Image (tube, rainbow, N blue to C red; front, top):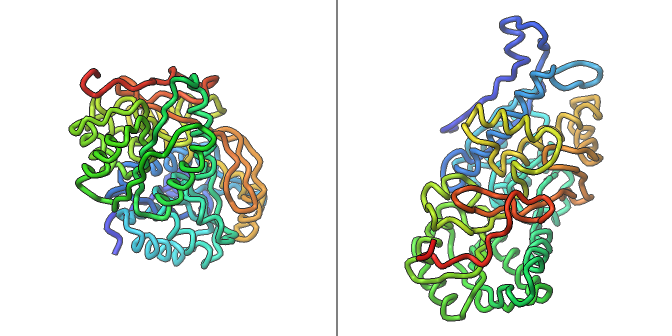
Length: 398
């Protein structure tokens, strides 16, 4: 049933087996995560997994978490849902049968929406990042928490980003490539509303099914409408196909903002210079100034060979939030843990974090851009590692 199960055996458990000095030897706190390690979201899920792994290693190396005066190690079991929402549900139930006290989420709004419903049914707290779908937070779920920006936040930050460009130079006409999903429709509506504040016209909105191979109709309509701004939220495979076909068909917008697709390093490996100038909205960057970022980057470098990827930071923060909540709850009772998470007011590697009553996070947010084959933090300006690359040069001149 579980094609790709993964288990992070905590240092605390190893201590019990081999007697390492300085490490706790106690029953672990069981936490479960369902993450897409394969399939269309696999590249994003790998970043989530890395953040969880490194955070667990750091917490357990420091002695674990304190629950009711006792030091206990964290043990996180990660199951692969293969980017399939049906399998997300079944894997969540498998973890419930193993007695996990909290769930950690994966990558992709549709998978999180499926997972959140299971967590609510099982009355088990759920912490998830890498999904901006706001609608799921409007269903009255008590156990869902997400320290990650949502569609309304992205809408406002899109306005702020465009307003940072001199008025005469800003994009005037937007093409929205709308994925045929709940989040696709939600974000298309948000960007259309943002147009009134940012001063651009929505020249065309075209809908496509996830996994499509031919985007030429959308691209040619955008070109014909004179679009100088392209907005979308494709999966990584879809996003790479869109950019390749934009080049082939001569669509050269001043700005391209694609959420989700450009997050993983494979973006630049596959597209080269054609992948440059694309702006992404992962909510974090390894250049963010926050406590613990340098340690996370160092551990990520040792583990994977580069500073932390953009989704690794928010995933790491989820484990930080959980560890602190377990300490405040003083118990492994799921409702007490849930209440402790709701009361979160702390600083993590992504900066300060609080939660609204609907479980959405009050968090800092950033825009990142691919420049010269590297992800740079470009907005807000006072935190930037590089200036915004704007306007993007035509593909032929890169």
